[in-house]
Image (cartoon, rainbow, N blue to C red):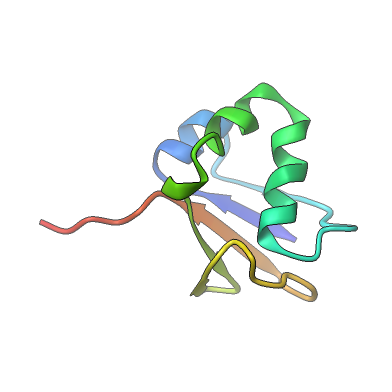
Length: 82
């Protein structure tokens, strides 16, 4: 599955996108936990889950959303307007 990172999350992870095998992760939150365990850069990017938004196949959802069959998951900080 394609995982996309935006804004400061992209900077902390060091990549805008990557292919990830979600095997065993049923929800976006479980995928985040797997990513956090990979390396320190992921742990830093996902340190404050209250500041993380997620979209599954370009549909805004929450971290407890199922990801089975999803092609793309995007993680980004809250968006503000001005």
